Length: 632
Image (cartoon, rainbow, N blue to C red; front, side):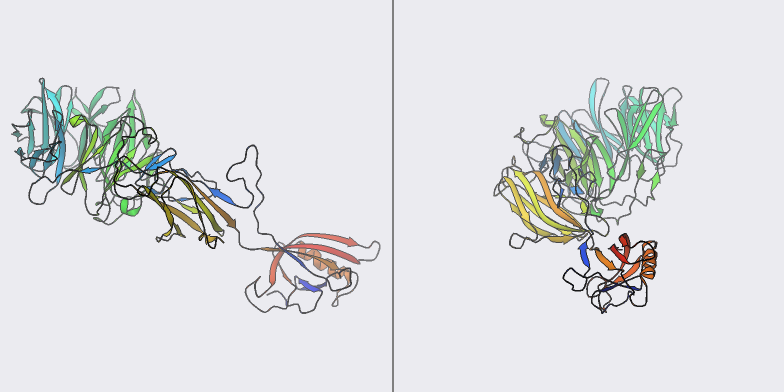
């Protein structure tokens, strides 16, 4: 503990007492104290920006690169949200597309919608084992057209011998129709189906492939060399010879069909075992996309040159725990690759693993039956939530992209009901497209936590939110949370266009709100007009970074004569020892007895950073020394 100093005009450095040079008027010398824990000034080259001001910092997050970033630091790219059910366009945050819940099927009992299919511009769905057709005008599912031998596991529309069929696969066979009226059961065990080389192909639970060039007649083909239950999908894509071929997704990776040798060949791409590997795999644009729990691998195979990358929503910080789950199906649209996410199933106990240099998946186990199922979209630049289920413990069982009824839509099944949502064929711009329809319920955007840094405090000063198309019905609610708390504090509700500024903690006492971490929640809600959505254009958060207080001291030591038994030479020697010390040294000029340094106890451990000496010449060591010290 540094010494206590009771005598006026004296200080102690490294347990040695020194007199302070007297003031010009002859009164006792003093110590000059100043705050040294300050950031270096900003230097601006070229035009100024929002962050050019000297004292405050600006965070102006944008979210056009989608979701999946939970925390950012000052200076890092702020172009991601943590989570959002809003559309995250460049310069616009708007409500998602309107989802329509169709009428109840009328099928009694508890069941899953196994598959959705399409024939002659109309939608069919398998409600348990009951197949029904949707009436787009009356919004009804009519009566049962066929009873499947088991729950549907797949559906396909195909042309065989110049006749177009719709077929539902089941473990008890497959059931097909060409007119929606007459349905035929084929007892050939079928789990998944595909169409290739002018033939219908199916594969069963054992991995045995069959084909048919004449509806109702099947021929055995290749056997996947894996245990029963390993096959997770059957689809068509481009093989290593740059030829379209059949692929089987399995729990252990991909197999490609060799028609010449009637064999399944393992694709030379190691994929660690996962029970959900390959479920809902698809060829979209120039690549094959293979789900693995919450992860997705992008696989490009052509001319003996395979490229594998990881693009799933599990990258970076992933998804909030109650939005995690398992990808059951992928579907391609004009703008997005859609991932159908079953939030009622844990992603699996995936220890973090690398995939031969192509990236890393992060597996986090969640409790079954706790999440919210969702539909996510990836446009090769960002992930965005397209729809979020309203209740936990309800899985999405099937989805289908269709132009049935001459309307481009996504259809999906959840909790024994069918929904549809319009899909866009081109770029969405809410300022130019006035026919878009938007969700009726409140939708959230949650920003990442802004973490100003270890051992640094932030002081929130103001938040500016710029909005358009806001009214008393189309509103934007603004909240914030502090220091990793799940509780939010409301700032206000925006109902007018332009820039709305909120002061912290409020406009009455805007003296700032201290924080270590802060994040914001923007909640959008529309009124009764389906084509209107509030539009958040920009957010600008103003804050100050506050370092822990550290002090510097300047004092001119009087070395003219002896002091407390030490000659000027001894005083100078002791001062040199303190200057050259690698460790901090004791410093005190107060008679304090507390234990909290710098408050009730103004005794410090300091670094002597400078000593400007005035010395006599010859045999005299008399003089003075201007000493600068900084608290450690």
